Length: 441
Image (tube, rainbow, N blue to C red; front, side, top):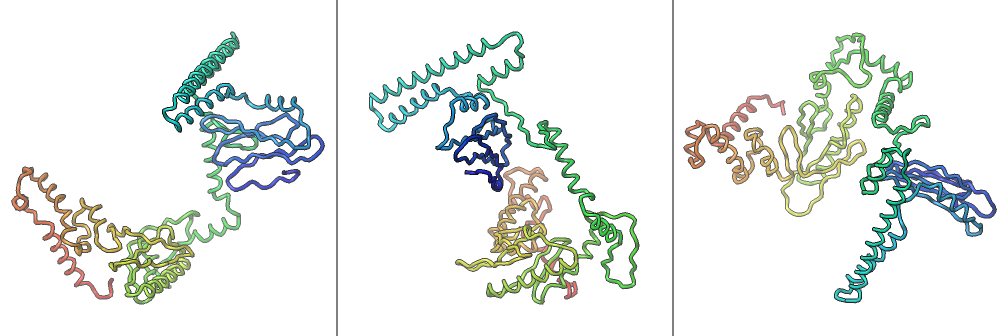
């Protein structure tokens, strides 16, 4: 029983209470809990009883009423009748409900005892009675409604009731917003009200005055990432409180020094804001400890330079061809665990944990030569899946017949086979890397 105490609403629920009671004896009150994602509104009840009613808007409006009757208090029938009259009129006929329930019960007994002629006859009688009761109820309801129509009845009300009798219900527009005690039901007004609220929250006026002054003072200074002590800062007339107008070049200069924060032995590859860090070891414990140390140093560097990596977009992959069960590493960033994946994409290449390159070959069959210097380590059987795509393109370009031999087709198009193209690209890549200084990764 509630009494004079009104508890707090549970999370994700809206609570409607009624704890007023006129009379003697024990009293507590009643309550209804409705999920917050379901539109609802409270109904005003003019009754001395401990009752609360809520109208819920789903596929059609439903009225839910909670009534508490103390065992030691006498309740007058007139109060109950008055409460029923306060509630919206229901659309359920008890006679029809009873007939349908008897038909379903007879069908259940017949299904459990198939072949029983007595139960079959009982089911047929119950089904006929249900049909007759429903037909009579519809006829009586229609007569009562037609007799209530007069010359002053609006046509919209008449056809709305006719559609409801035919079972065509249109969902009602629930009051989804309540601003200054006024319920807003129009969709356009609701959208404009929400847009104004979101714009006010994200505007500069929502920040404290001291924070706004600090932002203006800090962001009106050109940031210098070159590290040259001879450079001077120049005052800037305009500033951007939310974000920066730095170009890609300046951003690359600013974040390029992140590689210097990595410990010795940790390899890395970075392109703009895509960073890959790896370490090879024969024991998982050693690799896990070194990688966690590298992640901690990267986190400290980003925190001191105004950057932050997203833990939800960061993934870990354990490259290994050992058979049998072996656990993946447990790595953390900013206190969040990094999830281990079976495959991931980096700079256009789809890596899998066993380096078979099967996912990449299946995904990038139309981009045949991209990354071939890396995925050429796959087996010949895996690489042959690219040949039909290459042959089909050459056949379409030359207009040759489908029965043309592949060697003749390639000679006629002056196009080398894919394996020779991959070997040529690998030799060029090796020659280009061989001429680079050893300091570059």
